Amino acid sequence: MTLQEMAWEFAEIFDELDAEQINEVLAANVPIETLEFFVEYCERFAKGAVISNTKRGQLPNLMLVGYLLRTLEDRLEISDN
Image (tube, rainbow, N blue to C red):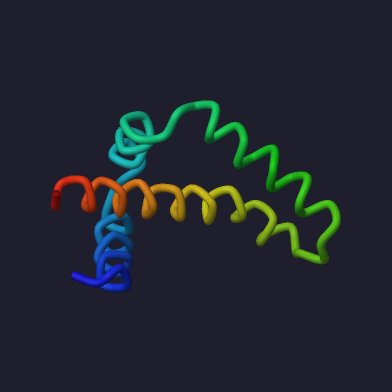
């Protein structure tokens, strides 16, 4: 499986999760400090950028999905060895 295929598969699975399942995934895979960092970083970043309020609110989620994809990628590489 390529990284692109993995990302698409992840997006499809993640899209099917309800809020409780998403919270379980986050609790098991993302330290609270990382979640707090994403929110804080995106607030600072958005202050200097011309971004709509709707998009500003989505920035932490985008970073979170990228983090989860990278975590999955690392785990798959480890399990292959």
